[in-house]
Structure formats: C-alpha cells, structure tokens
Image 1 (cartoon, rainbow, N blue to C red):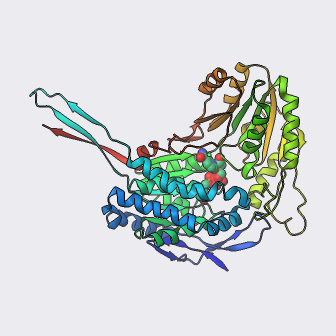
Image 2 (image 1 turned 180 degrees about the vertical axis):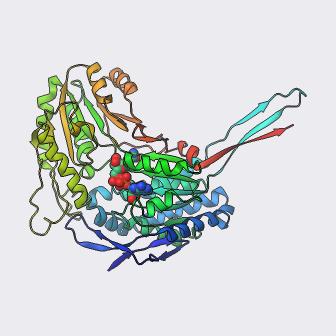
Image 3 (image 1 turned 90 degrees about the vertical axis):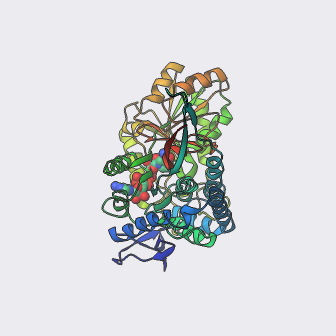
Amino acid sequence: MKEFKHFINGEYSASLSGKTFENRCPVDNSLIGLVHEAGREEVDAAVKAAKAALKGPWGKLTQAQRIALLNKVADRINERFDEFLDAECRDTGKPHSIASHIDIPRGAANFKAFSETLANHPTEAFRLDTPDGKGAMNIGHRTPKGVIAVISPWNLPLLLMTWKVGPALACGNTVVVKPSEETPATTTLLGEVMNECGVPPGVFNVVHGFGPDSAGEFLTTHPLVDAITFTGETRTGEAIMKAASVGLRNISLECGGKNPGIVFADCDIEKAVEGTMRSAFVNCGQVCLGTERVYVERAIFDQFLARMKEEVAKLKLGRPEDKSANFGPLVSQEHRQKVKYYYDLAVEEGATVEIGGGIPDMGAELNDGAWIEPTIWTGLSDDARVIREEIFGPCCHIRPFDSEEEVIALANDTNYGLAAAIWTENSARAVRVAEQMEAGIVWVNSWFLRDLRTAFGGAKQSGIGREGGVHGLEFYTELKNICIKL
Ligand code: NAD
C-alpha cells in the first residue's frame, strides 16, 4: 500500500498520531494509498526546520548558486516526467494529454522562469539633497521574507504549488507546503527531487492534512510563519486572512471566479467556439480562470450555441491513459455531489438543458468514478444562483445580449473578478471593453495564454495581491531602504 508521508527537514516521516486518510482515484474510485495527517507537532517541526534553514547553508548561497539549484530542480522534474505525470493523473483523473502539456512542463518551468526574472530586476536608488550640501544616498535592498506557508488546491496540483514555491525559493525564503488533501502525490514526490538536487534540508517541507482543525489551520496560525500564500476558494481565503491577522503576517490570496466570456457578432466564430470550449470544459471545468457565463451577441447566438453543442457532443470521456480521451472525471465524489447539486438547481431555476446535465454511464469498470456530463444551459435569469455562484465543473450558461454597454454591465455583475475573455475582430472594441472589465486578467481572442512575466491575480472577491514576474517580489521579499548620509 502506497503511503504519502510528510517531508520535514529533508526526510519523510509518518504522522506521530498514526492518523491517516485514504487517497482515492476519481477515475474508478480505486484506493491509491494512505495519506498521513499532520497534527500540531508535525507542523511545528516543519516550520521550525524551515526557520532554521534560513540561517543554514541555504541562507549563505549566492543568488547565482540558488538559481543554479532551482534550475536543477526543474531539470530533474523533467527527467522524472513520467512519474510526475502518472502521479498527477492518478490523483486528479485528468487525461495524460492535458497533464503532459500543461501540469508537468509548467510545473517544472516555474522553477526557471522566476529565478531569471527575479535575478535581473533592479532595485531603486535616490540621491537626497541635505541642508549641509553633502547629500545622502538611498538604496533599496531586498531580503527574503522568511518562512512562507504555501496552501494549494487540487485542480492543477503541481503547477499551482510550484507557481508559489518557485519564486519563494528564488527569493531566498524557505517553505512549508500543505497540498490539497485530494492530491498529495506530486508535492510528496518533489521532496525526493529536492534531495536529489542538493537543496539543503528544511528549505522545502511538506505537511499533509485538511483545512480546519488540521494541517492547514495549524500551519496558517503558526506564529513562526512569516507570510502565507494561498490558492483556493474565496471562503477559505477569508479564514486564512483572519489567521494571518494575528501577528500581522502578509498574505497573497488567489481565489475563486465566475468568469464571463463575451462573444461579439464581429468575432471569428470558429476561434470563439474553440476558445470557449477550452475555457468551459478543459480539466473537466476545474480551472479557476474558466468561463461559466457566456454572453453572445444576438445576431450570432443561435449559430454559436449550435456549434458549441456540436463540439460538446464530440468530447471523449475516458481514462487518463486513453490517448483518444480529452475529458476526465471530476476530482472526487464529494466534488461531483457539489457540481450535480448545481446541475439540479439549474433545472429548478428554470434553465433549458441544451446538452448534458447528468451523470454518464461509463460502464461497470468506471461507474464508481466521479464522472459527470459536460453541460450547457440557456434561459436562466441573471440573478439565478447558478449564474452567481462558482460551480467549478464542466458547464456554462449561454445568454444573448444586444449592446456593448449591456454586456459590460452583465459581465461585471458579480462578486468575483478573476478573468474575462472577449471575442471580437474589432481591436478598438477589444481594448475599450477590456479596459472596463473588473478582472485581474482579460484575454482577447484567446484564453489561458500565460506569460509568466506578467501579473496574475484577482480583483474583488477573487483575491488579494499579484504574483508572477517581478510582482512576486513584493510578496516574497522585504524591501528595505538603506539611507547613507554622505
Ligand atoms: P479549498 O479552498 O477548499 O482548499 C484549498 C486548500 O486550502 C486545500 O489545501 C485545503 O486543505 C486548504 N484549507 C481549507 N480550509 C482551510 C483553513 N481553514 N485553513 C487553512 N487551509 C485550509 O479550494 P479547492 O476546492 O482545493 O480548490 C478549488 C478552488 O480554488 C476554486 O474556488 C477555484 O476557483 C480556486 N482556484 C483559484 C485559483 C486562482 O489562481 N485564483 C487557481 C486555482 C483554483
């Protein structure tokens, strides 16, 4: 039986209490292994190891040495690509074809992209005139923030965890990671890679468990944690923000979304269909940036809806290793219950189910998995819960609109503000509408096209702060001003 242990101070260790929980594969509900659940003591040991490592060999490395080590980590993930791929696909059920293009390569790239950016970013210097005429020099100097707690979700486990661990380590911090209880495998495996590459003990630590009254809460309330970076649901973000307020620890929160897609009649309709298909259904709709509300200009509404239904009907559900499959199950039975609840609610709220809406018959071998049908609705009112709440499943509602002004108001009529996608061949309109979107990221004629040098984060209830490129410096370092009287 496979066991997922904590990784503390460079060594794997079992839970002191002996407490474990099951990790099941959502493809067929088979048991992958047992995950050790950390109590306060294990979390305390991990945080103390991370604190001590700041003063150990890690803290004495030059920036160039640190970057060389992180490049090695990226290379080693790529050398062990198939192991990471298998582990990720077993935990999430996602097709190999997706994880081999997105999760694993981007997970590795996160250790390279940020170290280059951060190494080449200048700090500021100002000369100040003083009454004695001799002046003073101000020099900005960045130091690591300290021990960073990384709390990550299950939808892109390796990618979203390294998106934080990469820049945190590049800036010289140490980390304690609490991966999602649903997807412990790739974070655990990364411990081996850290040891193989010679990353000093205590720099990268992993504790497993749940949120409240478990590893997540014990980590975020630990007084020696200097800052907390989190990706997950908005309500969890609120709990973490409360925990961080004790001791005034800094936070970076990347939270939920209810993202609009806007399709103007002057778009290239095939591009818009292809992009909206990806944004609503890739990763079984479990992408924070995904589109759950689609607004289509009335002149092309029927044509667009018909094309979307045609494409949804072509999605091929299947096991991760099935090369012809492009659609996997949801991450867990529990999450399927949540998504199915919204499928039923949509009908209660008056939706027309254009396609899908139920649980597919996958045959005896797979019927215990967390499969669900990709779904399109029309006809819901703008205040329906299905329109206002994040579902995080493979579904979208498509609604017609008549004017640019109307659709901007509809798109922004949400508590969330993560992303928006605009489809139009009129570049003046694209910029005009993009500027008015209340969102952290706006795509025009594309979706999920990410340049790691750019800012990433959400407006409104989709988060606090920006990471990515040099923006991570604000969170992962302390900027000190050194003033020298001349
Ligand atoms: P979640 O909030 O349930 O869990 C995320 C992590 O927080 C898990 O590791 C969990 O164990 C931990 N946690 C839960 N309660 C906690 C507590 N009280 N204290 C400390 N830790 C706690 O989210 P999820 O279901 O894993 O992920 C899906 C959500 O993540 C969706 O809302 C999605 O939009 C969001 N998401 C956002 C982004 C982004 O970049 N903005 C990216 C991916 C996912």
